[in-house]
Length: 147
Image 1 (cartoon, one colour):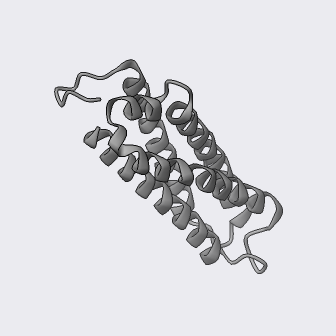
Image 2 (cartoon, rainbow, N blue to C red; image 1 turned 120 degrees about the horizontal axis):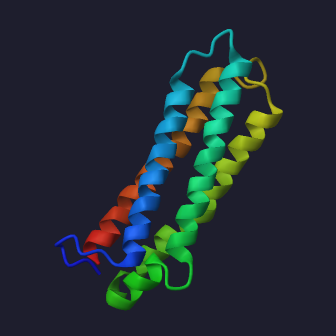
Image 3 (spheres, helix red, strand yellow; image 1 turned 90 degrees about the vertical axis):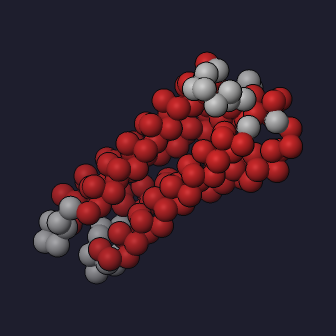
């Protein structure tokens, strides 16, 4: 797949751009969730929700570029079929990441942060999602390097 001399296929180049977008969306959610919230929960929620919606969009774009016909996973499979198990594992994480992001968006839209959903718990859920995405990105990076 990669000649280790930075010779990128068009698919890999697009994947790298999407990867950067996903990283930026992760950072934006982390920054928003880390801002002061006590006493300003509605404003905090609004900002986190906006950034989380951006992250959900970036996840969808990531899934599209990797799983589409002739996408990254097809390209890797053609050049390095021995990596099929790793591709399958990453592919299986996609619906989980998508659903966790959408579930958090829905919860932020329907459950006020406060007594019913303590701020600490809301932040913990956001951090767990971000951690899963970071891990997924690391495994994807390893896959591309191996290919």
